[in-house]
Image (cartoon, rainbow, N blue to C red; front, side, top):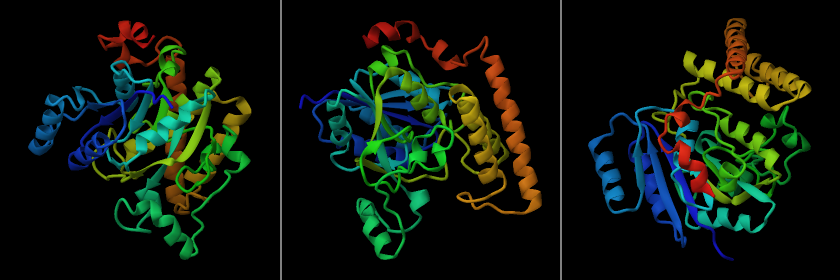
Length: 349
């Protein structure tokens, strides 16, 4: 196989040692042609982190871009315009990646119908402490199985391809068989370059905070290209889910997070789903995240249900406002403010 060039893109905000570990893992990949782009939105790093990043940049091992604003979709777009790879691979700034990771993504693009590869995520937040340590973490499937825990999924159910309810059935953590999927996870996904430059698809910078569902929005819009999204469990990494840093406030009890969560879900639906699909998603969102029914398992306290209902309603109205404003403002404020924006199309050809 003639291996395609790969651009590894790492947006970061407020991360220190784990960011350095993530970059080190990427640089240790044994792959014939790749680059690492770090889009850094941290106002001020610890001295040790700054020293590491500056050294790698001076040695030409990474491209280190420092920005004075924080937006995950904006950072992704910024890096894409400065990349050269045939394949654009996005990872988070708090992951650990094994040897052979780039090959695992790249080999899927030998199939012309594949335009996006969704990798498997050994998510520490979802796997809890089933097994300690890395790189042994991928072996936790056997320990969980021995403990009688059903952590292995062969075929995703048909509902996982239904845009209205897929988000409650698609599991890229425990699924062990390669297959077509409807979306990828933002911490481990790759795309053909032409999806951006030929088809003119970009991440929507109106998705806020952690940009919950921004990758789902992009994947749903990518259906217009005719390309398939292929899930490959061999293209796996470990997502540490650090509780500090990141381009957002991940404290799920915070008011800011709750507003962002609902706004982004509603915005994704309003942009991409039919009326019937929207209704089913909104109903499921209410049942799970407001009422607290499985698989959310939230408190059934009437007071807490009321508070969650308030955020649900405010998030809906907020998303309506975003859609209305979109009649004259597409929200790509960071893209329009980027000096390389005008030349990005010609660079991608």
